[in-house]
Image (cartoon, rainbow, N blue to C red):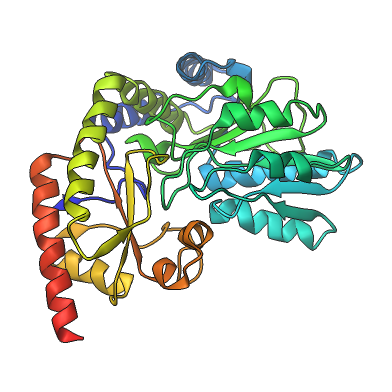
Length: 373
């Protein structure tokens, strides 16, 4: 089996599973309880939060645990918009965002909010002049993902921050789900940032929202004591502890892991360039993702053809809605390319042998599917 869908979700590392299992067995108390078992669980959560904060370069008080990035995105967007509606109801985003950004924004438009999409240049990067032009007196939020989840376009957060920072009342949120554990992020540039543990070899069902300490937002969930007033519910001690473990492991040997992905991507690109496909990812993309469009073959057909060979890729983001890639269309302006794109996502676990086997199988599938058609 060859797994090339790491951007959708990652396998859980054995060490993380061991941590989760141990905490389930040994830390049974509700961290909100006053007895010694509860205190023991709360101490573990506090220690885990401190470790996460240290790795990310933020304060422990700035971490809000969620069920994942979708909840974190909804909490950030709705939390800001409901809290600061008196300042205005204007939001800026891009056409490269995940559905858990676009859906709450669409919902907010039914409540009278206005959403503008900033222009992208030919490489898929935010047009900074257009961003400056779009910011108005009633703009309260700019939400731009650090890395697009389908093509892998990596935005320059520093340059975007420089534009937004000139407008003190405008808040900057970024969905860093595809960056966390793969790329270094300067959280001081952001007011809010969403992430999910399942993207860096951790458990599903746990994520976080970074929120700058002095920023106040409305909570998405009310009722029940937790680690913060911004997200109610009994803290999930085993998940939080495993979050810390997986994040720590993700940043071990970081540079070596990153370089490995760069090296295998280079091999993959060289081989794909000799094939009958269009490569949508470019030099401004995180190396962990390579998006290509097929010629005359539906992406779902290719996905299932490769699946029969026990090779697993994806068509578009697993959470996306619709029958074509909105991100590919935003970059290429080509509906056919957007309807026939596949995403190959890499990891430090991916080997050259796996890349070679994939290319051989991919070429074989193209020939067979073209012959049938």
